[in-house]
Length: 298
Image 1 (cartoon, helix red, strand yellow):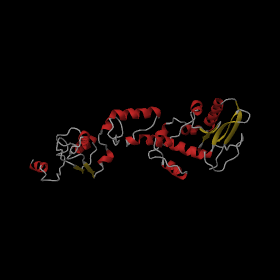
Image 2 (spheres, rainbow, N blue to C red):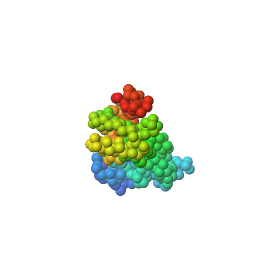
Image 3 (cartoon, rainbow, N blue to C red):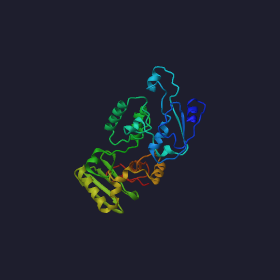
Image 4 (tube, rainbow, N blue to C red):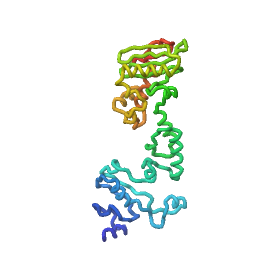
């Protein structure tokens, strides 16, 4: 008790303890805490850090005190984590209580406005991951950056196939397969839809379809028949799409000059790679239906 009294009076600058002051000890003057005890409990971490989060007596709200120009004896607490507790756990913050990134800086905005704006963004951008947003003032640029590396599919592809077909031009679609093989769907000069491709060395061609739906159906059926083991890879909604990008994918993106944001998913990485390969200006063969290239030789 004498040491605690001396510390409160400023006669002792540092207190060293083991599980003595972890919880229930209140002294607003504490401005630095050294986390030297590893713990697997997030609650314990919050309790230890909480010893330094008390604000000066006589002040109920730091923001209001600042706005009124009041002198504040303490407005922050320095945490020195020497055992990496903060890499295993996150401190509870206002944003984390509402399911947001615990590190989100709301820039003094009311939580109601933050939630309303994020909800509007979520409605306008279905599926966007807002859990990594750390600066509310950069919400617009964050959305633009995420969308830049999110590959979307043409509405007609979404309506007629479950595979990852890329629209490469007017009435031209490509489906890239393992081993640099691909299938092409395109309208020819006779106003018919043609399907041509190679799956596991088996070449096929049919240019008699009167509508895009039938052409896609035939193309998908040929892929399923000749390359059944490729189906999980080719489906847009396969579970593996949400997994983190693999090492080979990162190396391929680097090789192709693609610079995606950290944490990109395996599915988006694969779509970026496929789109880049499809649009590569490398050598190509002449299109049998016209002058547009239909096959890139990588």
